[in-house]
Length: 159
Image (cartoon, rainbow, N blue to C red; front, side):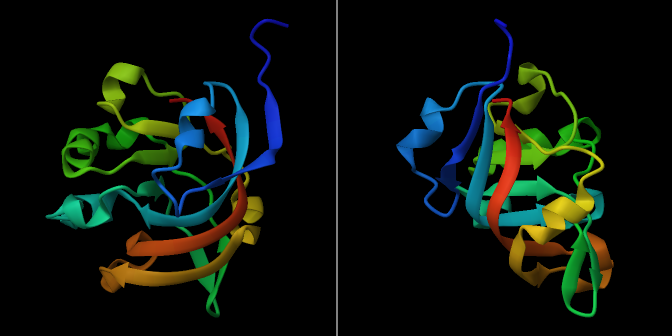
């Protein structure tokens, strides 16, 4: 089939190495597992961030995880289009891309790379989180700015 997505499970994209030239080799529709660091934020967090420059060259996973007894038990994606008001601010500050749920028009992305995470898979995504820490806005609970270390985190390339 012409539009069939190509499964690239054997490829591990290192988000920790954000200048990885291999990222350019991925095509829209490819399924990819990635390993590395990703920042996690939601609506309230994005509104509080005054200086996105501290997140330069990173990816932001749009998610409000559920954490119980120091462990991430659910980490499903948030609908991306709802947060498009923040895309231009992110891009100007050098954020490399976002991970979220649902289709987004390229014009709305303002040049950010977009990786789609599947809705309804919060437990699967949580199982890929090997470490996490709250970076800022702890008072926001699940909407605090966090940093996840993930292994083989499955996404669909939609850049």
